[in-house]
Image 1 (cartoon, rainbow, N blue to C red):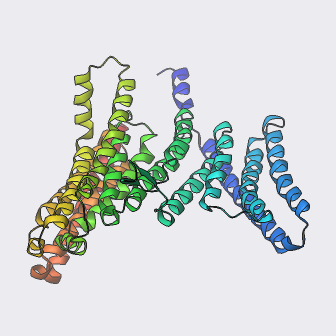
Image 2 (image 1 turned 180 degrees about the vertical axis):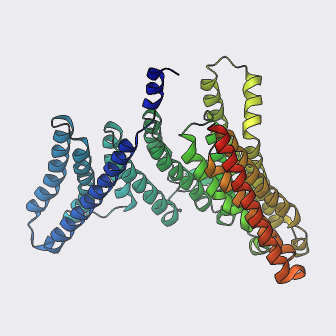
Image 3 (image 1 turned 45 degrees about the vertical axis):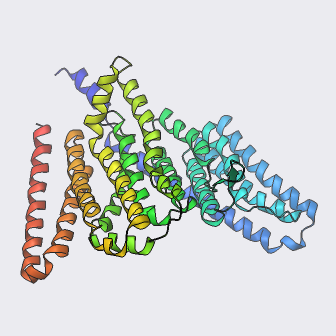
Length: 449
């Protein structure tokens, strides 16, 4: 290989000095962000201590002066002095002042209102700065505000919904503007090719979907909706090209709800679930509501799949080819989504039409589905790790399979095997991990030869 070719290849990678500089820069930025937050908190407490003694006009002057002053100084540093990091810290501080100003102005004029609206308007004020400036710090603030606002609205004020069809049907308060406010930031993350920012908005949207269980009075179905949301995120992650860094945070948040499969893999859990919710549903409309997670998630994820797959193939792939690609890449997430929705419907039917005698037999089918889901997720993650040559999904898949093995041993064979059986189980798990480590090390060495 020619020297210029070697230099060109090495130029594609960061040197040790560049990596160290980037880490030091990130560390200093985090420290400065925390310092700005603490300074703003100190100023809030100082003003609050003397707030009653300050005249009304002076209060307003302090509020708007702090907001406008910090934003003006931040924009000056950003566009005139070309100091983006210092500007980001000041604008972040200004956004904190803006949020505090909303409540302070309301207090000055004795305005009483729906208090979650303050968080909503705070987020509205942060959105322009988050989209127009190359800053992740403001996206962190925006995601936190939207998440808190959605939780306050749905958990605290579910009854504040809208009545449709002359009052025959009521739509609960589900914080439905959250996706509209979050999607611009997600689009910004994709345009900037920022996996970290994608990793902020993915759990925010998942949190909103899970909150719908509370909004629609389906709290006892929350565990199924959590699992369905994880499957949805896995489907979206697989819509990216292989090895895309933007898929990593989405897949990470999609795997975490796999923990919902752990309690679902126990038959006693399903018995208690049906027993506690027997007779809970009073109308046939509730049956349709159980299908809502599946219908909504399919309606959202299928167009996303088609869009990404069409753009990846340049629009030249036929509809049949795109469908085959979806089936090949999405078989596990789609099966998990369908399985969780079917389990939700099953528990709904048993709670609505079943009798106490059915509780002892209704657990078998959903328990088998949950165990098949745990095994499928573990094997699928190992396959993703091998496909993309990434150790974390492969390792998580192995550990998840071992966790399933240990759980099933103690669930089914602990009384028969006793301590010796447990010792054998742990020995086999340790040997399996040792073998996986040797396999992965040999694979990495073979790829670098």
